[in-house]
Length: 389
Image 1 (cartoon, rainbow, N blue to C red):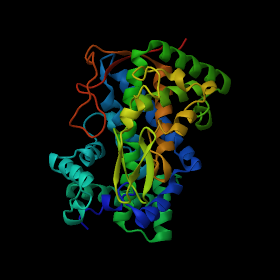
Image 2 (spheres, one colour):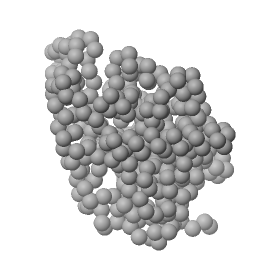
Image 3 (cartoon, rainbow, N blue to C red):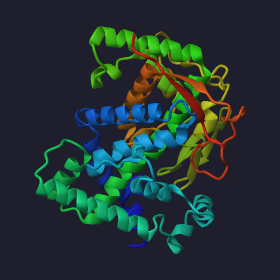
Image 4 (tube, helix red, strand yellow):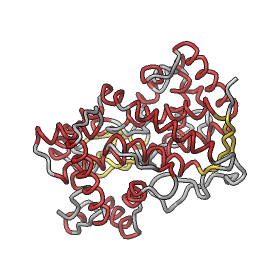
């Protein structure tokens, strides 16, 4: 009642409620459905390229550009509308998306207290979404449903799945909006962060960028185009994305609740008991940069994930590669996020030589005020168009 949107979000639910909501939404992220949304991503990639060319070789802040890209993709897939992020001005969906994750000091303090004293949330409840944001997304969902039903549009996207789910489960408007916000956050904010960091690393590491461009050209020469199936069969692209997710995971940490008392070797071989109900914070960012697990951990080196070395599999088995979390609560939108990320990278590296602009700080400092990794001063890059020969 206090927060009808996030109160229905699987990310924050527990127990049977979490299982029910997770089961409702999981079929929306099958490979078949993501493949059906691939043309939408291709279309937005073309708009992004035109936007870059229109900027006429000026430095572009890639965090914002990446957010425009992911906003347009998820808006089309969820609501069947063009957010118009590359058309100029501030796209309303983009602005409202920012407000969802623009946590005030009050909310940050609430999160901290809940982590330290879980019982705190039983006595003090707070809404994570402003009323104006809730009203906006309820309105846009209503409009999207009305448009699709009125025009009898048959499109295999996320909204299509929600409409099917509504028929089967008798979902309310708020249920629909909550599921839409789940996908919106999975595909919008975290994906844009990873994309901007990946472009930054490619700009810094010309040898990696050149090698990736060679793979893209060879793939196009072999297959004629980069289809959904082809983009997921490019080994070096996979390595680049994996290394970017290692060095720049979309979340600093994840928290888990112990559901059954267990013993773990926390310090050396000595077993320590983790009691039922304990909160356990797993520092993803620190683990991914720990020299005990990764050689030269602060260096961007896609070769560490080469197929002949075992790829990411050996690190996942050790529990030291967890960009999307792990276990039953692993990120629902993981495959969709990777698809739009890979296609965006291919589209840009194929078309542009990417270099770091002098506006980008020499030494990267993460913004301590953000709950997700962002760079103080932004990521400013230059894109020089590669003319067709």
